[in-house]
Length: 215
Image (cartoon, rainbow, N blue to C red; front, side, top):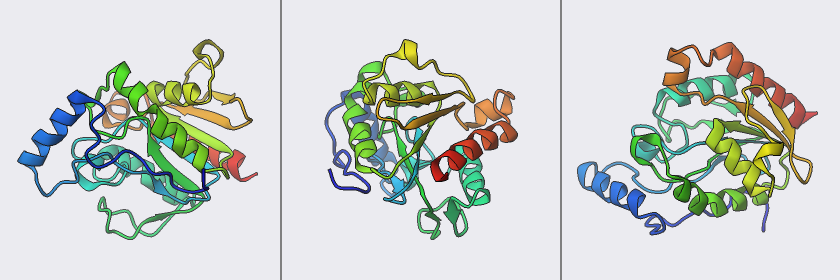
């Protein structure tokens, strides 16, 4: 597979009926929204790849760019800018001119799931697109999984067994093939509002992943 940003599911991907029904309903309600599987975003020669869960209703599902338009994106892109993994200004708009440097963002599930909770069969159905993206970025040295679902989907993409790679915030694992996987709680508003994840905790994981990727 060529190096870079891999092709993902088609705009009208039919694989997951529940996600298709939600997509079509939202197209009727909000015809000006993106309302389609969200492609990866970032540097095709990245040494660091970030894997999120799925598009948010008012975030990537609306704007068409991962983590763009919701609170999780505010924290993520602020951190990337501070760590010099992004350039420009993040204005929660895919036309803001923001670019990523040595970093690429993708999701375990490309379509918006109801209540932000994809079913196991939907995660599995979308995994080939995640695997294809991870295969395509041959320059990658480190991955960051935002949350348990992203972590488990990454591990399965590499043929690993869950018992050998337990998820935990701040944990780091060497995957088959040598890539280093760093775990973080998802940078969602719920996690930060409840104190499960502080900005300092998130920055610490992202800094460790960047430093490993760029060493």
